[in-house]
Picture (cartoon, rainbow, N blue to C red):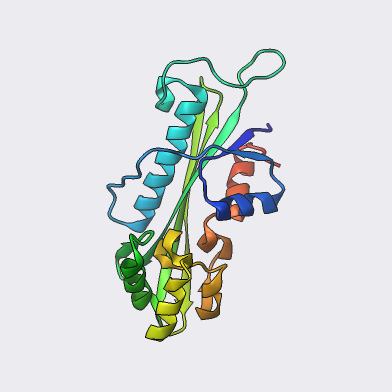
Length: 215
């Protein structure tokens, strides 16, 4: 069954990755505050991606079971049936030696993160949660992907210059593999797109196996 696909994220990188698949989708960013209680990076990204998907599902369908207010279901088919939608939430963190690195709070924080990652191997985790339903019923598909990234050593001058570009400031781990930091990436083990912010291949495979068509 073809579902109306909703991306619950304002990330331009996730938007671009979805566009590359040829999927038609809408962007309805989650507005809630992100809070996680898990201690492992896998738990963190699953919890955060779930919060995004649930919050947007609540607004879209407007029913208490989705975390929203009791309202009429938005959208529908020609015969008046509620439209089926798949709300996609995703969250990415970097983990190094047991420490979870999200987006830097400021330039000093970005410098700290990059000094940690320089010359070392770290993991990037992206959690994906899809809530599929029509306001009266729902299914939840949730998973986390890990990619290992090894960076070349960076000098203090190189780290300073990179932070001054402002590119690190909205990215987990304070770097963008698809941007200016590409020249410092030695190798990766796993899905490159996962590091960018969305493992689209794994997402498509899991949705297809669940009977959720997005293409």
